[in-house]
Image 1 (tube, rainbow, N blue to C red):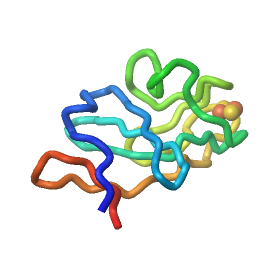
Image 2 (spheres, rainbow, N blue to C red):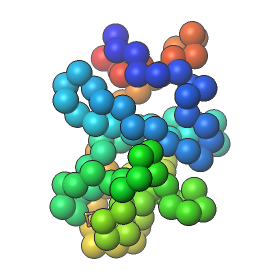
Image 3 (cartoon, rainbow, N blue to C red):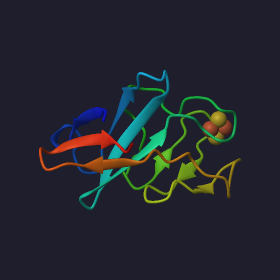
Image 4 (cartoon, protein in one colour):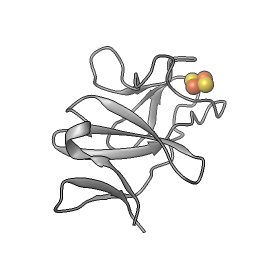
Length: 107
Ligand code: FES
């Protein structure tokens, strides 16, 4: 089972990117004590979402934001609620938290 990081590495309303062995880049964010992971690919043009390192959220930390055309996505389900890919969604990555406080890729 692949460990990605510790829960402590991802503060509430912040996000961190991680390179997986598969070559995919994902990011994880925390909202209300829950952790959400998505592929770092905007469904609009399949580009990476962030312009600045680990800047995946909008200014208020409310939504995930694509820096290219400003699409906004729900943190909880990855659905685009505003922007050119409205109605499409980020690709969720299945993760699980273990008792050691680690965040793991779900096998
Ligand atoms: S590439 Fe993300 S909104 Fe256009």
